[in-house]
Image (cartoon, rainbow over all chains, first blue to last red; front, side):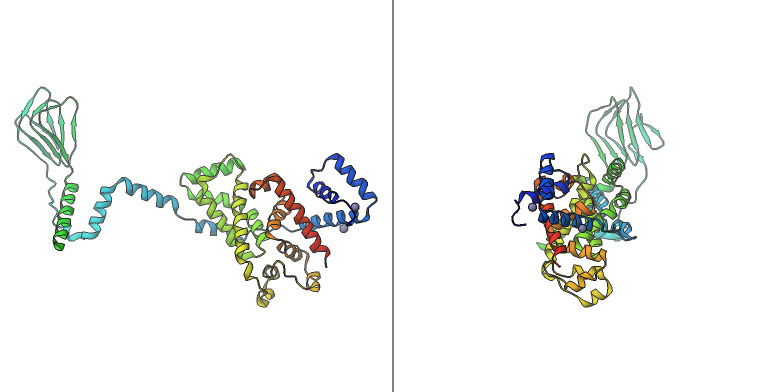
Length: 203
Length: 187
Ligand SMILES: [Zn+2]
Ligand SMILES: [Zn+2]
């Protein structure tokens, strides 16, 4: 076989891959008619292919799918939580605070959920909603606690809404408008105080 | 099938982990078969095939849906198999106890260049013999032979899975066939 040009072996492989040119195929066939060694080589290659192709199909074990599903990382949830935490740092701070301080501190929380409002005669009170009526001018600061404020007229002073919402469309307020969420402010106050107390320990 | 696969992939990407079960179901046998033929060991094949599905899941966002999913996941699996083969190479040994319990597993424990006695090979069952001969191939030929003759993939698909030029795939298949031919006729 050592006598045969090497390219006949290449042609055999091209033939087995199904991408031999017509010319090469004819050249190979012509050579093989007179070359026993190349006939033998081609025969062995074909047998080799048939041998590998006779391998039976192997199936995954029956529990395979369940095992994969059981091993999947809970990626989406973890990412979701991380994203949420990053967007809500105050809640995180509060959660940490609650965890650290526990219920003892909460006992000192001013449990005052009563609705209250400053007493100007031209304020209209409807349930827990305070209205500055259209055309009216309320003199002095208006403070609403645990209720909502709707300003349709004018306020000649500061407006403060604690634990409620403030609504005004064409409102005219001469002073400052402030909305306070008391729970968070109280927490913030406590956290700052704790931090200061802690700092004081090291001074 | 591609439409269903892409639909499931979108569901998984939106956070529906259960949609991945259908993908595992569709490809588990093919993937396990590649791993088994590459590694010659049931336990390792299962381990690596599972790992391939998990890696695919984790990296699903980087899969290009215009391409075939099978190509992508076969690539992950073959890469893991090749890594595993390279890592365990120095650890080949013939374990009499393993040989007694599972014929197929025994042959995977033998070094690629280590040959069983002629007599033992001749007495093997055909299927054991096929796996034995595949496992004796160097890994760069083993992967192309498995993908071409066991998975019956086109040369183009093999070139995409292994990320190598078509010409290289052809050369490796030619050499792999020659290596197998010599193994089978050198007894
Ligand atoms: Zn010849
Ligand atoms: Zn024959």
